[in-house]
Image (tube, rainbow over all chains, first blue to last red):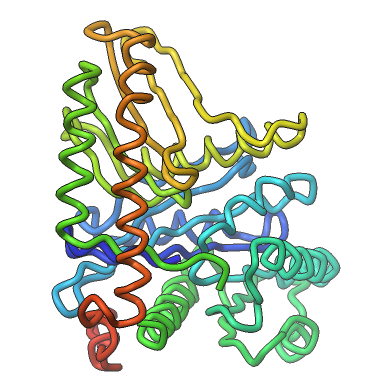
Length: 195
Length: 164
């Protein structure tokens, strides 16, 4: 749900990073935080457990620049990936404008990817959204791992609507900004359509 | 899409800001903010310079969302107010008009009783202003209240954001 603020001449959009536990959602946000100009980003808020697992969400506000005199601000959220935090995941999808699915490329995690993708579809539906209709990008993370599955096989198992796909190694930044740019662009294009 | 976009026009912003400023004065509060349930900040008044109001809005919305779910778990519709007591500062969260979160931060210059009383007193006026804002959002989306600045953004405009 985009928020257009004429008083502050700002437009705010919400992007949610979704995916299985330990897939690299928080690492994406940490990389973006670390590499963004401090003047254009807010604090990275992490509601995490003592062992650094996301408990509720991570949140990073980011200014991308100005379009037609309006500051474009993106609010990036992650969800907790662990299966039992489903109630929290559902809440974070409220008002979402675009979703990045961060899949884990390790062969042993394919089932978790698929389960999380199904969970995304079902939770979006509960909030009244249809994944087929909202801006959506697939990121294949951990491409540097020894057991990473072949790209084509991952696409075959995870693609749902010809969405853009990005290979990534989030801890070293590979593919992180490409993914962000792609989803931000899709959200803005959607905004143009619905404006 | 399940929820419609919020469009905050300048005149609505001024009305809302004046209302929460009045509440802040009446309740002797440090800060009063109005936050959308999805975590977007609508307006903030008071000693907010040192406060990260973007983070405040996001966390307040998360707090209310989690508490609403807890309420439903125990068979309640929702908990309409939340109160967090600190050593110096306290936080009072309440739902206005069913859709927006009113955040009041106060210290020893005020009291929970006074804040609750004043919030209750001003909630009706605020809810009416928010309703008006929502109606205008609907009108703006359907093109009846002026043209959106985003109808004619070009691919070049979008590219320029990414330094191409």
